Image (cartoon, rainbow, N blue to C red):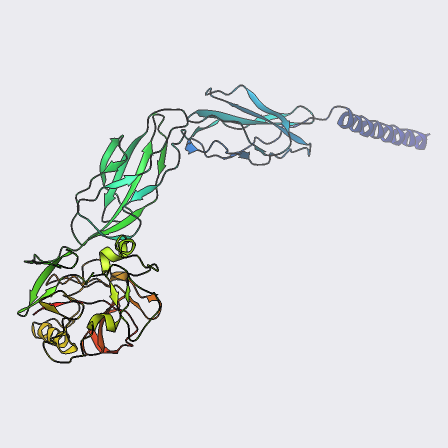
Length: 436
């Protein structure tokens, strides 16, 4: 009897335990406790960001769900501090590209929703879009990296326009720093400005175009260098009776030199082929035969004429004396210098303390890559190039015939006077005349 009671008790206990386990399992399957997803964390644009481009994409971090449910997102975006307008609903990605207006402050948040209705919201962030910008524009003058700019030069730039039709004003940044930090004019409507300039100085400048909504468009930064002011020179005057061309003249060491290359041309230039025996006249890069056309070119006005040796001597014999005694192609009362006369000028300059004798002779502008001189005496030597047998070296080197079958040259890379060239008579070079 006692064993039956024990067995019955054990059976009751086992049945109760099975029933308990069955009850617990049923509760978990039929009434699970759903947990909300993790609140989204906003990423971009940063909170309170300004000048945001209107093509910005909103982004946020993935919102995990503790129950492993799938998560979708509602994006709230409007101009109210408590955004209530859903801009995108039920999306699965963590980015959204909205349609935005310029110069507007927006507020946004993201709500994460799982498959069982659990929700969690991010904080509210804001950003302000960039104002509408004036159209792009460019600078005009002085040109980028221009040298020898006159001291009365003005800054000139193209106008900008406003997409909304509003007026545009300009701020001018100008100075010797790069980038220029000083504002020398603000809110001006003109597209020109005259700065205060100092000689032989490099300046940097940029322009900001502004509209009424606060949009700003910036030009590039350009630079230029003003000309070097040469010493004051007491110039004389020579008028060539053959063509009435007027030349400035200067006196150096008791001799009067033409301060410009000779520019005399006969009525017809003649054939353009090279010749060792017949006179030839050339204007750099001009290939025609009309003297009037040649004289209308910029190179003629700046560098004068290139002559072959027969044209230089004009029927006279070569001479190595000092003075040469050869009028040649020069006006009456003037002569073509011999090599000895150029050497005498060089010796005088060295004796005056000019260790680089070409430096006081070269023009302050017109030489390539910083090869300009000081033009101390007003001789204004320029690099007019030569014809050997093609036009060559303009801006880089200058060549001058002497009566000694030799030529004198100067170049941009150094400030010596070279006299070691015996030229082919057919080659054409410049001429400077000396008063008898």
